[in-house]
Every structure is written in structure tokens, then in C-alpha cells.
Length: 144
Image (tube, rainbow, N blue to C red; front, side, top):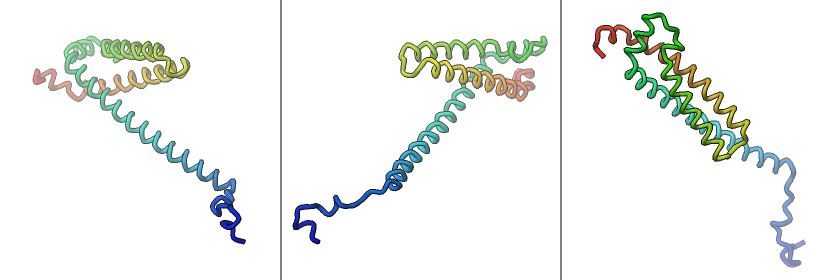
């Protein structure tokens, strides 16, 4: 039977099966998830680099105070008190701005901010301990 002669377009007679549609949607979501994961990894790497650079700057500015405190027996938390205060103030500012902009729910904003605060504090204390131990002799000799 010739469909063109009776006015029916032959391309409209193709039957789409349900599994073809599901595969198409599944592929779309897979590519979207891959894109989001790669973006998250890149942003995480950039944030770690920024945190490490700011910690190196903090160490250079406060190295004598850090070593004096460590000689007096202060714990790591108290040695890096200024750094933790800076982190707290910056994350409080981020929290306030995020709440004012209201781009996400309050529970998501609080959760992400709290997770970021904990991770940044842990990374800061660990990294500053490593840098302090590594540069101990240079600072004591007065080289840097």
C-alpha cells in the first residue's frame, strides 16, 4: 500500500517502543551525572589549592607566633587559633550571604556550610602541622 498516495507520511508510522525511550532518557541522565561529577571534582581541586595557598600565606605571616606557642606547649588547636578564626568568619559570611540570596533550602545551606567548615578546619590543622614540622629548622636559624 502506498501511504503517500493516501496522504499519510511514512515517517509518522514508525512505532517507538518504550524501552527505546527509557534508554534515551537513561543516556541523557548518565551524561548529565558524568558532567556534574567532573565539575564537582574540578571545583574541589580548585578549592583545595586555594585553601593550601591561603594556609601557606597564613604560616608565613604567623610562623614566629606558631613556634613560640609550640615551645610553650600549646596544642595544635591553640597554635592555629587565628587561622581557625579567619575560617570561621569567612564561612559565617558565606552562610549569611547564602541565606539572604535564598537560592537553596536552609537545611541544604546549613549542611553544606557545616561540612565545608569541618573539612577546611581539618585540612588546615593537618597541613599547618606538616608545614610547621617541615620548616622548623629554617625558622629557628632565621633563614625565612
